[in-house]
Image (cartoon, rainbow, N blue to C red):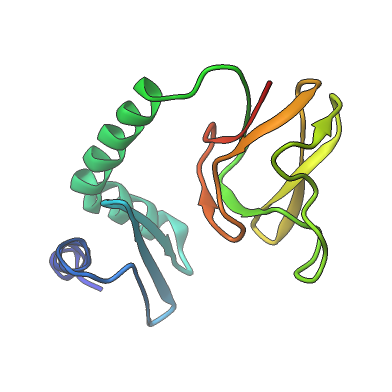
Length: 156
């Protein structure tokens, strides 16, 4: 895909009501998702040396939006004992689709107790509590994409 077309595609998704787009052509896979006015771009190609510069050069507007959203999150970050995501991936509240969640609001947890799973690159990573306390708030929904350092739980 040509660089100009990639930029047009990113802008079209940004301006539209779409929340996601997947595109594949000649071994290049492009996945765009939009959450709360932020576009997350993932590009995979047979030759990563070709794909990396394209993503870095193609996403300045998306990166600026992501930086602005990150600044807003940091300034509005909740206080208290916060369990944050140690990696980028997909949040899962339970070990299986038909299983009960690891924790719910009001549950008491101990340091080291598994609270959720974040899937990254097909690996399931258990998210353990860094604190003893009671779950006061859960910030993410099951199946939601999470970023590095994003608050997942607030404990008291």
